[in-house]
Length: 87
Length: 380
Ligand SMILES: Cc1cc2nc3c(=O)[nH]c(=O)nc-3n(C[C@H](O)[C@H](O)[C@H](O)COP(=O)(O)OP(=O)(O)OC[C@H]3O[C@@H](n4cnc5c(N)ncnc54)[C@H](O)[C@@H]3O)c2cc1C
Ligand code: FES
Image (cartoon, chains in turn green, purple):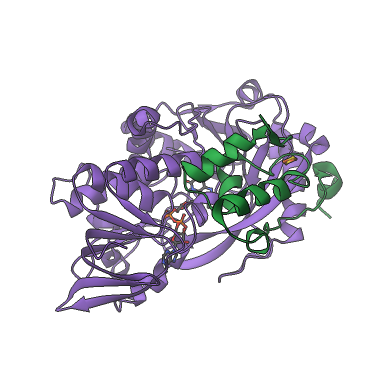
């Protein structure tokens, strides 16, 4: 059993199952279905590994599989952004 | 690709997939055409909150019947939809708000909802993290059977169940045109071929306007960019969704422990804008800190955008049109997830010529010709 996403505890089998059973062909679908890349590190290690599995299983190139990006790029505390008076 | 179908559904969001299931179950040959992938649209970007506390009876009834369906849906479809019923807590801010709340609660109780008005103390009992002073709340309404389902799991559950019953779902396939002959839909032209059909259902979310144009129907819907954010996960500390019509805020703690929520952005614009804004992040963070002060120490992980498909009265557009066989299923503003199970059932009944469980004529496009009753109980 190979772990692909450590933050969300997702294995290679989970990903292959999502591709074969649910017909996923993109990282976006794997994110939705498995929470791949949604953990604390925001996919820094797992997305590239998952992209390689997708490429192998679907025959797409790695460039085609590149992830979409949702800021903030680093996590930041609510109190730091919101402040005390909404200024 | 299939060259013939009874019904072609445009869009594989929660509404398209739920309808595909309800029609396939009734023996119809269904094809769903999706430009991107399942739940790409508003469905995959939504809060997936399920609220029955509405100001108009139409929405309240649609939501209540949908909750009854949601409650048995994992069993019915054979896949877990991640339903959690932790209630919705709706802040009341002033005397005017209290008057409106009393009116709503009376109507909601009359249709059988277990709603009640709760005090500041009860707000803190239900969710100790909340600060009624910071919320500027004098009281709240609470309905314990409101809740949340996982939008991805629910949509996939409907889609997979529909496929098992013979429905075909074509992903990465775009509807390019719809041909009409003698006032009736004839075929759908897609990027991968043509499909002859008796019915076309327009469940393309914020893009429904463009689909309707293909048959010459102008719609009053407007796409509005909405933003949401999610924090890091932590131990479960409250179960309800917290919302306010005055501040437009909504947030809850999800299954994995993260806080998910949204609020109208200071830079809200009409149009297909997809860029997330820093002003939303700042405003939402500030309001979260007021509503639930301990959250100030929790980190935000992501923010994203999606579209509300907004009609002039914030009620959906459902049913038949001047083009025979062209069926509307859109205009869901910020609540198209929670009413999808019942909406799908009603439209399936309409298409199959069955008796409808609830009348939907008041939700057709015809209503914009007369005076309109607006749904005011909206957030986000
Ligand atoms: C930030 C946010 C929070 C929300 N929170 C809630 C909530 O808490 N509770 C709730 O009930 N609702 C909520 N909503 C609203 C809800 O998400 C929507 O009303 C609902 O998901 C609409 O589903 P749909 O299936 O009708 O449309 P969508 O999910 O938008 O699906 C439409 C599909 O049509 C496809 N499409 C478009 N054009 C074409 C074409 N030409 N050919 C083929 N396919 C096409 C799109 O790719 C898309 O997948 C929220 C929305 C947002 C944006
Ligand atoms: S390893 Fe996947 S999100 Fe961190």
